[in-house]
Length: 295
Image (cartoon, rainbow, N blue to C red):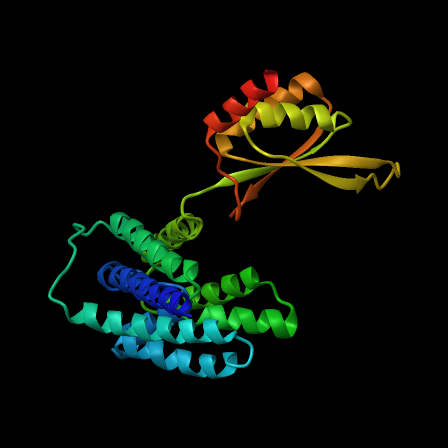
């Protein structure tokens, strides 16, 4: 129980750190350089520009009804982390607006957009990685997925597109283009932070020489391989499908093996966002195994 409590505390700290990073970029780059934003944060910028309402208050107020609606379908831990994410984001926004500090980008909107995207991606990535959310579109997307079967990505896109269009009420098209650059950069950085910068590839190989292929892949790359049993939809013949998880740099090694053993093998390469389990092995370990087998 003590370990669980400690882990939860670390998650709370990480979420607070993530919202601090996001809020800093939001205040110093979005607000300071008249760049819009998607989601509830974007609505808070509209309220600030048109009615001079502090975004930290707007962000909190708009999320309260969403939290009430989301209480029933969000898990207990996610709900608690979401409340904390919303509160800490509002607190940091309030603080950074009152701290006598500013980042001078020399009126260069491109630099401002890039920095806004980097800070947003890192901040939100931290929050997501440790099980939290900042409310807003996250709750709406989850609700529509459960109630109407709408894909989460579609909800995010529609919500952000509407907010971006509304943002044209206070920014011009030029600033909107820089906002889109910031959004693109944020999405890329967020993916890296969520995965820890650790990317791998999966290969599905359909070949009649699966055992020979698996043996060679294990010996040459030091990676394990798994047989998946399949059946051809047209021929009705049973097939063995070889599944291998590799680092991007090892893909070429396996391609060379394929070209030698079975050039006609059907191969599909897929992105793997995360691997849990014993995946990374010292290459030296497999060299030692190969020497033993040869003896």
